[in-house]
Length: 414
Ligand code: AMP
Image (cartoon, rainbow, N blue to C red; front, side, top):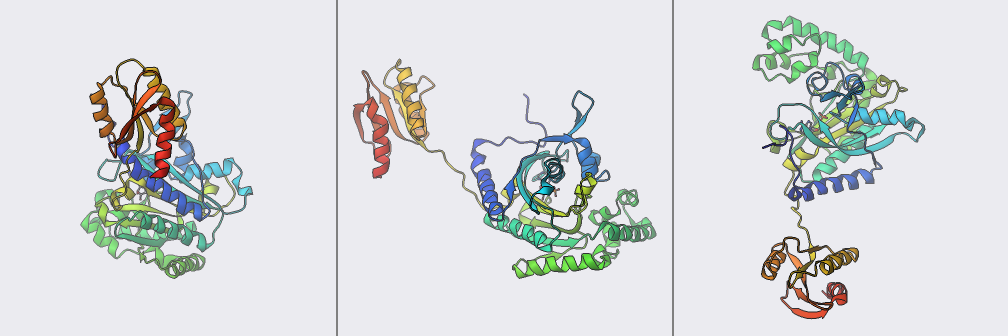
């Protein structure tokens, strides 16, 4: 039997209500802060991610679903949405709008990672981007808005880790410093860390190997090597967060999976999640738009995983469908009358269903009860029907034309 591809899942009707709550809360909270919704294509030119996310990242090196479109162009299913939004910002001349341009999205992403709880190959992200401002208030606003969203969803025990990566120049200088330190301690590092000293020394902070972790404990930290402007910017972000009553931990080893980050980076984690504890995170990416051939444009944003938020959230409503009317047939035939009545009821705003499985009358009533129908109309002869109130058990004969008005009137009375 054919199954859903590894790392993917079906969203069954039962799961839809909880996901809708996530969408509604995102819409409410982000909308209130002036973020407007955007949707970009599911696939983009591969080069967008190679350049934007960074050639050396795990995402680009190992996790992208890339294909030829048949015309010799290389396309990739989006592994993240920030680079596509920056592409759209440039393509639509959004730099001419009042800055910053504040956007949010709820989109699917694709990464060929090893699947486990909370880690999938197709997953959904809610995200927000503020493009065109370097004010520390932007960073703080974004972080506070994500904290509010997690709060509203009841995401358990979340922890906020915060750091600053500084500007590329400060980072390059620090990088060399770190590389020298790693080389001096090479014999104590795990082999995969050793081979990445040149390509991506920062990832050494991520290593799970004990001996490497011991080396990294004493490694020089970027936070201690920020230039004056970056340090001042970071101090202001911290001040605003504290002023907003948000507690955070400074984590100088915070590593994010994309190369585009500059200055502020942050991540919310939840103990309720286990190994894949990241619920949402992001940061400033002041160089990304320029990297995509745009003008120098500071920007900041975050993304949070819908599935991870749901895993870490309190019980969200399962949601049940209301069936106002089930149209039954006293005897076979009259299918056209039943069909017409159900359609008319829907146009009057009722949720209406009709018998589609050729059940006996007794079977139809049992079915109506099972789906929780509030009323059943049993089509009789000569334009008549029996209307049964399933809650009270009352039933009476009436003209077919009166069925819908009577249900609507009943609703007004109750
Ligand atoms: P990132 O785009 O890597 O910064 O991830 C942002 C958020 O997306 C994470 O905090 C997770 O909640 C979610 N996420 C990232 N990768 C996956 C994945 N493979 N499966 C499910 N959720 C993910």
